[in-house]
Image (cartoon, rainbow, N blue to C red):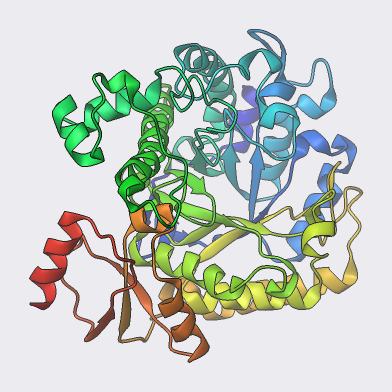
Length: 478
């Protein structure tokens, strides 16, 4: 502890988010950074790797903390490197502090990151995120890791400025089908239905069904074109996924708060709202941001560049800090066969597109190679890949020159946005594609919000729209 106190000579600092910026006291932090996984790199190379990061003019480093790697046996943890120097988390945080980096910490419980079991120990994987046993075991891990991190919080004079509470929260219905109640036995889906509907009669009326118990309700996983009568059930499946994510997010955030995390907390999502309801999640944390991994020069998926821009546009429409939590840098083993190998021009196009759509910061993932990740601008020995390194350096220079947190978007065109429509795949993609092809820039507006001053708004949804959104639409324009 004395070593930490020597490093943390500054007074307790206030960390806050306002004006699209993260502030430490009165100093805005340029939130352009990248991911470095200490536990997958040789400790003797940490310093030279971080020196290369500094040469990019980057001041923010992000890292996961892997539960599975640090837990030697159930309830027995090594965060000090007693069993392996790569487990010496304080040594890495000390080095980052000494070198003047700001730190974004991501302790899970889940980290995914192409690690076995997505980062949780083997004995935990049988339980979904809301299972009481998972919550008990996760809390035991959180109780162990928070005291290691807390002395480094900026609120304690340290360098950790942001705290991610879990990773891409997902019910994973493909693997937990029965416990979730999406198979043959009742489960969490039926708990959701009881909370949503006041009575069995209301459920039957909405579903046009005649079941005799809510436990007999079966989720509909897709709607054939000729079966519009199944749409209410399918929408409830989409609502259930959002409900699950929000419940898990609240538990994680509350647990970390009770353990003394007093930093701004954030959550990351997939690139669409199909699983995570971005805006509702931001009522739980300081901000929410997507993880974006486009294919090389947006070539491998239909309408990909427009959809990428739309992810940023939507984040910009509501977020206190429009931020890409994971922004592609390099590629994991095997995926390059599917999406191409990202090259220099890919990063130019990707980053400038994100800035044009209104993003204010990001974290490149991965900024440094690791065991099953390559083609990053810095490799695991601290050597640079010149053609990429120079491009990344130039992008950082552009970012700092323009300061996107001060940029003002100029468009008078809005497109309506309904997260449930989007989640269920019921939105009107043809309209968005037409605007994109006509080179008409636009922003999104959620219909459940109050009115807008923009003179032109297109309805971007399909034939289904919630009653609340219909009423708001009439209030705004009729």
